[in-house]
Length: 116
Image (cartoon, rainbow, N blue to C red; front, side, top):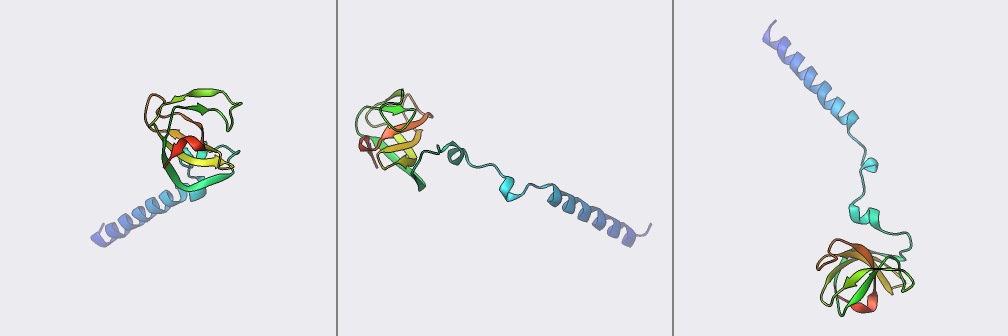
């Protein structure tokens, strides 16, 4: 086999591998959403274009829903960091606790107890 035949054969094999990889690759619509976007509840009225990093102004309950009728998931002490992703009627913010004993938990906090 001469060198030209080997080069053509190698190029054809490489082309088949590339095309096969492209065909097997998932489409953009099949890509999973980010964890934060997937976690947003359907009761949100407003979703922030970027997460709002806030701090609690006093001790406040982290709740399972937007209102005092929902059970508390724990207490956030004054100065705890909370990242808000969406809210309900600009009264309750939904997000993730990013500091303190409840770090990593998701829930609702009354907006009047959050400060940017």
